[in-house]
Length: 292
Image (tube, rainbow, N blue to C red; front, side):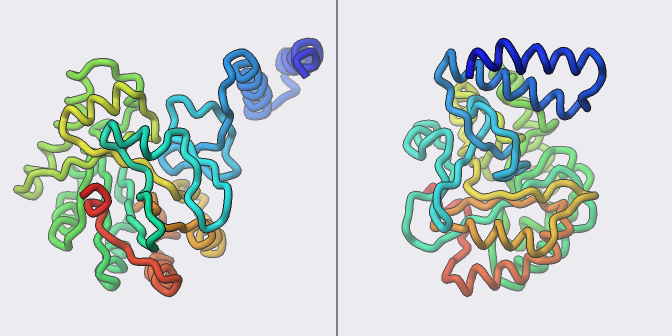
């Protein structure tokens, strides 16, 4: 295999690139697989599927799990394997699922901007008396203070998704890390008159051990996820059937579910989805209960 990569595939790929025969995406994929294989062969890295801020699926491009939150689903109805264990995350006050056989779910939404889908999502949550957690960026609070106030008034938790949504794993100083979170805290305080609950979700699921330590030192609990699906492309939304296939088939005890509040599919199906989860025997509990 190594001989094939070195003597055949790599020269052939470079030749095709030179002659502009490959598309940019195809070339990227070929070179990426070569790089990943080479890294794996020399460093023993494990290649896993990953979700980037929920932005991925079992069809996602496989990469080294280092620096990105990664999941590998082994069995339907059972928790996936993460690229860090619950025990490893716990030392940094971080979670991706609850360690339980009880049929409980923790529902979370990431909110980077508003396109009219948050209100119906809130309506469905209210109908089912469900408390969710919305991880918001700072600009969302500035642009949508009324929705932020509604979240708080209706018993939801508003968590910190940073101000600029950067790759936090590239931030090496506490000063810069702290600013990304403090700016959001200040905006939330101005909008609601309340202090923000110190729940943090790294943008795109990108993290480092130092980041986890920094968040912990600032009093934050970090939350990844154990179930997500491709729901973030505004102009290419999944069908109801596609959404239910992932969100019903892969639900499991103790799941932290990540959805995006920008998704029109989520807004459309949430009432029915909550009903189906309830019919399956699941209770949807506030995220805060997980770390009590």
